[in-house]
Amino acid sequence: MAAEDHAILVGISRYSDQSFAPLNGPPNDVQRMRDWLLRADGGNVPVENILTLTSPTNFPADTDPNDWEPAEHHFQRAYARVVTDPQTRAPLRRDARLYLYFSGHGFSERRDQATQAAIFTANATRFLPSNICGTIFALAAREQALFKEIVLIMDCCRDAELNLPFSKPAINAGTSDAAANVRFMALYAASKGGKAQERSFPELNGMTCGLLTHAFLRSLEETPPDSQNGVSSTAIKQYLLSTWADVCGSIPAVEPEFISPTGPDIQFSATSKQVLQGFKLTKAPATAIRLDISDALRVSVVQCYYTPTAATVTWTGQAAIPLVVSGLRFFLKLQPGLYRCVVSGDMQKSVPFEATGVTDVDI
Image 1 (cartoon, rainbow, N blue to C red):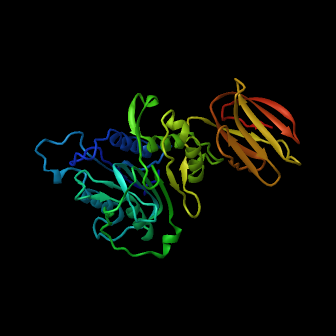
Image 2 (cartoon, rainbow, N blue to C red):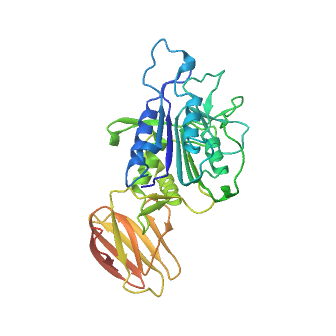
Image 3 (cartoon, rainbow, N blue to C red):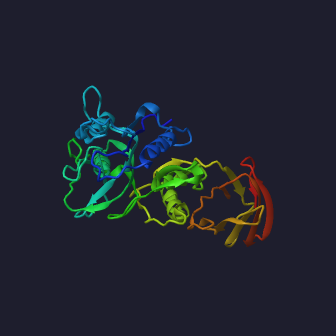
């Protein structure tokens, strides 16, 4: 278990200002993210380390519009609980990961040249634009080196607003010398000025969810893992973007914006229900070889290219990514079943096999 990992999940679906249309996706988005974070093969975050802030389905008719929740101070309080010692209120620095997730109506500052976004709070109005700028809170945690890794997901519109300022964290704005070592990953539902979308998904029995959230969780499930049964932020980015049109279906949507860590990748657990199938080359090829793997219906699934100096894997319809080969052995994530591997080049052969994840396939 990632015992020191923490998460704050915010989903705002109802607003006191009627100019903000009600949303159906945020409560489902938060629940799905929470479910993944709790999974042993997902985020593996302790339940007590996950804070959720969501708006009630309906507010009582006599509720003061200023009291609609969650408001900015609710998030400030949750953020303070995560980043400070409860007794001394001094900053806590954890060798762990922080997840910050936001779903709701959002915007970006038009003059801002950085990639940033905020969501409006439930009590916001166009004149009193109370908001939570997820980017600024994430970057504040990075600058103070409060966590070793930070994952920010903003499933909201990024309307380019001229006169709406971002909120600021109520913490000291200092910088730690260790900030350069913090790995930071951010995922935005749209580029600046773009619109996020929520959809009803048949595969979720008609549940309405944010398009970005659905695509991200699907990528965590389906991205082929490495030999350690993990997936990197780079692999998730490549898979998410290459399958975006498929997720959107007949209704197109602008591609999300993915900010990768500047240093080493952030690693996630592979949550796919496929098996991790091992392959073993019987000898080191003298020249380049290609492995074409097709399923029982002779449908191409994946191609692997191996040279004495490098190797790549290309899943059908996706971009090539590096293939980790250790001791002439590598792994691919496959659905259980019957396959055939056709080898061309220096080692021509055809090898039928069953993907079970139990024994290696000798090539």
